[in-house]
Length: 134
Image (cartoon, rainbow, N blue to C red; front, side, top):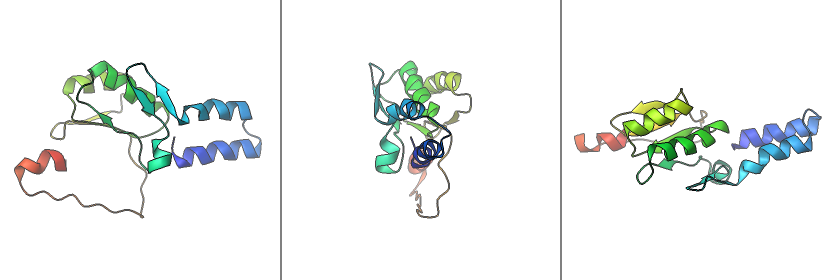
């Protein structure tokens, strides 16, 4: 759940274009969603300004795909770090727009909204830093 999406839901209720019940159905995922093997944090973007990132090690490809699917379904961008091509295959089955970054061993779905408020630089000291810089 992004701040923009929360604002949109509330504006629809205020304008009479959505019921309180339908808004509640969307907002109930604002907290955590328990998948049994992981608790997906749908509220992190509101609390921290960036959605949850999936740390790949220790999770099998099916688990990574299930978490990614839940995050992507809410319209949030998804980042999976330190993962495998096998996980990418599973994720792309549930999210065809997923992209694989081989050197970074990362999967990305969607993108962050453009912002002029924050700037970042990525510096690399040599070839051993390329996977992290990527």
